Image (cartoon, rainbow, N blue to C red; front, side, top):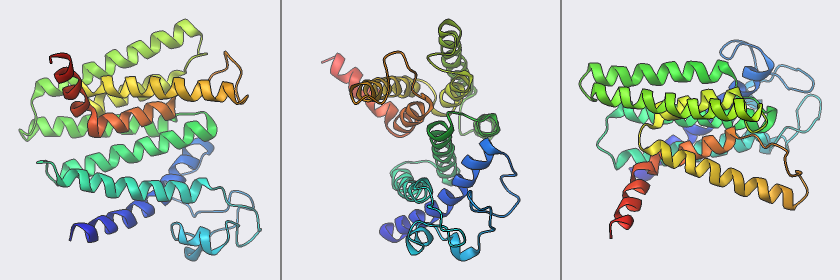
Length: 263
């Protein structure tokens, strides 16, 4: 039963991943996220239902548009595939918790937002307000609802809000002091979202992971000649990665660290 459910969540994830590709593209290049037909980015031809089957359509078409023959970006099947695996993983993680179905929906939502922002920053160097700000509103509303129904303490909500404010404040100071060379305003808003969504103290794991992985990748890019010393690298993808790690393993990592420090 668990295997069957995991497969269903993988299939659901690939379908959601197809939608996330649309969100990532239209949040940067314009157009309604929920309205309008999907079109080939190259020839603008309206895509039929048979062209939109997650992963399968890409493989069946040989990675090319049916109408103009132009290559389809690998981003599309990769996002669908990754989202499928992450949805299945999130479901399996949720099975081992004592939380209700709403928490599963919450986790899937946060994961989806992180995927979109990862893609937009890698591809376009942007973290769109049209994604970040509604995501902050939805997460804040969810956490307030938990307080109203008695599933969470008001102090927890305040702690999460303060975490978001403090982290985004630190990032804002970095932006000002660096003249937006180290990071931009989008990173500030994403930092607030992560602080609010992940909460204290797991956010510290998100920050450590993002700065560590960001530094490693930056050094590697310099060594292979893709970047020169002093050039910036989009930080949003590393924040998204750090947030994902902290969302699922943040508290466990901190507990292991504290246990190691006291032995």
